[in-house]
Length: 275
Length: 153
Length: 161
Image (cartoon, rainbow over all chains, first blue to last red; front, top):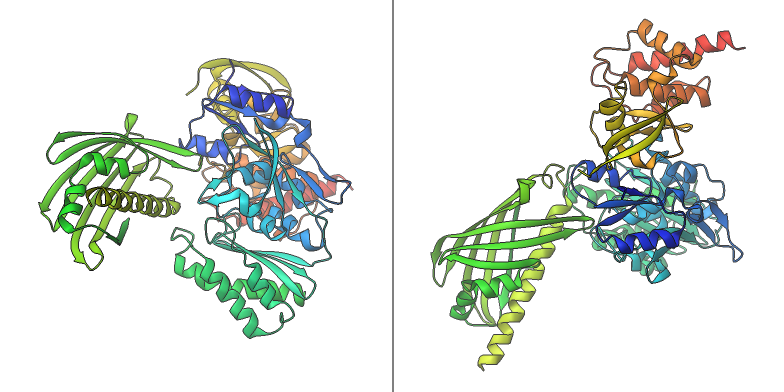
């Protein structure tokens, strides 16, 4: 039996994963092969999803939602004109993942499946109220981002399941922005902020400051209609700091991250009000 | 990596000390502990599996109680290594018991060092994981003592 | 390491077969089994760019590509780009600009820069730096590498109006 198995359909992939408990699904390989090279994971075999046509493509559905196939590369998303208005931030986020070459390889399915707390997609997808489509032995299921991201590096993926697609609701006019602060371009975020204008208010999600993106619909509600009021924006930032649980690591201390949150949130709100 | 914490158990101090020196009870409270055996009165061997996202590691651990002052405090050194020594963990921990209106207060501190494949990348998330494992242990330990307390009463 | 298997790959226009561990990366197979050593192992994490090769029409990290996942895809290394006019212009420019010191990053720089010029014939400074941001160099401080890309772009423009 080969180490790399190449299913042609989602069903075949699910079957292969079920038959080989030590197997892992392989999408772009940008995270998985890197971890394997570092001996952080040692899969018994890999189920290569690259040949599955159903996982490819970015297409508008009949109900107006946008289906982004799990195999969509960061490069494809960074160039996708369908990601506009209050979803333009997703395009921006895709464009700042690593560098051009890695963006030719990495996929949204792999990134969301890996769910690194500092990953760029997580806050923009949380802010866009995306749903994750999981394929597995029990069939297909859809989860909201809060229901999908359960803890530090912990997702709702059950053994044998993988991310088949990300589904976005119909886009609003926005605008939207993704701000990322990193030690150097291409690094993971130290702190990131996704912000989408919605009427007289905003939706905001803060990345890299906890196990999952920070969002407070309650605080967003309190801020609505007061986007140009510095005190209201500061209070909003403080509410997000209260929700945060940042790590101390090489990219920054927890304290530094907590200081960044209100500043970056305020800047992102300015982007979508003045911008 | 330095960690410390404190929790209160609803049980008298002697009972808590007995529990801490009961390897079977302690092993049952350690998340991912597959097995534990006594080598001597102050040395124990255990196998512990830690899962962290896609990463999984099984450690063969040897624990030595280096110093104990019953029923006040003890110092223990744990050394764990993965098969083929892919990574090693060592931790020096101190536990101090004191009386509390609600029972017994346990103050703990530990200094953890990780080397090898898991330590190489300075995963900042390691601390979060260790904190969450400590919280799991604390909850299990307190629950156990509450159980036996009720049993005794 | 996984068991050895026969892996079939298309490298620089030729079908090749190697007997290598099933979990070998493309980088390992290129260097160890095929003696195509232009691609270098710098970090083995996809960060440094020294292993950059072309797969189909895009530059990718050979260290993050599994040899067993290359079936039906065309791999082109620096060794296979020798007669490409864009590559030749870049190689000449790198030498003239003094943009090569230890040479470890050079292969990856060339493959990435060639792809840039193929897409953007006259890139400005910021575009060049952004395109090469995934290729690390410990020796040159990048300035001469960027100059080399500029002068290669100019040289090509003079040839192809």
